[in-house]
Length: 334
Ligand code: DP6
Image (cartoon, rainbow, N blue to C red; front, side):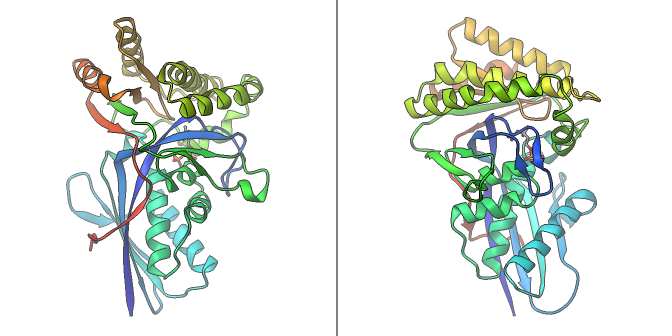
């Protein structure tokens, strides 16, 4: 007998970043983080639970179209997570899974956050275990991709630092309907990044600026929470831009340093400042990669997207915005 389930789960962009961990295996962060769930950048994953012995099979949509057997780090992490689900929920058997992203996977656009949220939801449904969003958040986090904990919810999401048991999952601050914000993503580089987030977390604590960051974070978290509650973009914008620059300052001053920014990153940051000088309310944030997420209101989205697309350094612009949490899908991938 076999049961198949498909889940669609969103990526998210952090407004206050998870950077540095107390426990990297279980993804227990040093600090709280807050993110916005994305609507267009999603992962679709189908998982089938098959009775009997045998190895799990993992397929992934390749950039040129067809599904192919997964390999490398992705295969290892997916199989580890499937094994975790088998052991947590006491089900034997084996899994077959296929997955695809709606966005370029190697572009540092949090594909592991949406990927592990989708895998966790589809696999638990395939074994007949319905999870509450906070249980899904906890399970997705155990994959080792901490930001996946936030992809279990739609809208605006906070993930505590997990110092107590009831803090080891994220929760929603506001729904997507509560505040319509847009994220115009300027892709300046499509290749692999120079160091994984995992490596970045590991090195973060070696930066001489890391301790100072921890002191500043409580006030910054309050400011972001407050701006979301008041739906105040002019308060949110400068805070998230400052936060993103600080993440990169920590990365660049880690030992050894990591430079995620590329020349195109600086060009986009300059363009965003230029837009603001012309009265467009747009602010930039970047995760551990060179690409820039420009946060703005629906009224300014067109002007932002058009301007960024004229920059020769920008390879592609993705128009995204705040969106719902994970859901089950009727269309299976196999
Ligand atoms: C800079 O360990 O969750 O995006 O497994 O690559 O998704 P991946 O990374 P993870 O760290 C995320 C780091 C970050 C900031 C953030 O999303 O909070």
